[in-house]
Amino acid sequence: MTTEKQSIPAKEDEISLYTVKAISVSSSDYINGFPFDYIETYSLQRGDEYEAAIQVLKPERNKLKVRKEKRNNLTETEEIRLSELDALLGMTQYLIDDNGLFHFSSQRTNTFQYDNEVISLLKNILLTKITDVNNWMCAPIYRDAIVFYKSSGEIISALNICLSCEAMAIGSSSQVVADCSTYEMLRKFFKDIGHPVES
Image (cartoon, rainbow, N blue to C red; front, side):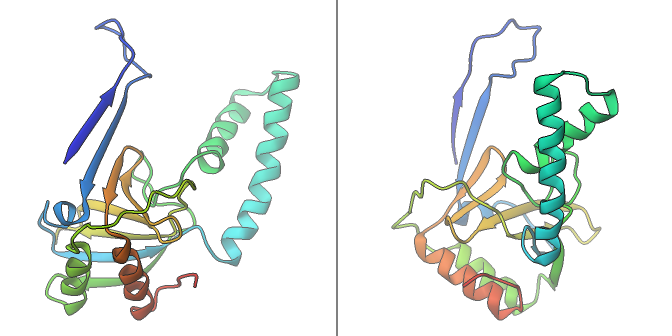
């Protein structure tokens, strides 16, 4: 696991909003990094319902944004709503947000216990040796995810996956690096378990 930290000096008693901490871990270190009892697979940011919701939310955000920029007369409730819409539409989306809430478009597609052969297959995919990594310049849209749980139902980790950009992340500052072939195997894995995946 490598850690890169860049920061702008701040007074010790201040919270620095300028600190950026980027963590990168290999897919094999990731899957070997914690015990789990079962997984759930999720699909998000796709489908007709999602697209319809976005078509309603974008104009609402634009209207509030323009009003704030031109008149700066939003009510407290409108300011909160604009902030929510900015978070939802203005940045990379993950299955689980910083408040522990699942994305509004997420749909659980499967649940597999640890002793299921699907788990062995997933582990083997993530254990693929890294020999070739693509560094696409596109921003990932995480449409697939795997959540790892303890038997008590406690979430251990959520792996967000963008098959188009060949990117995986645990959160906004934690990337999981994998070989190019891992993504093709993940695409097949999701399709084989009945998960909706774009071709």
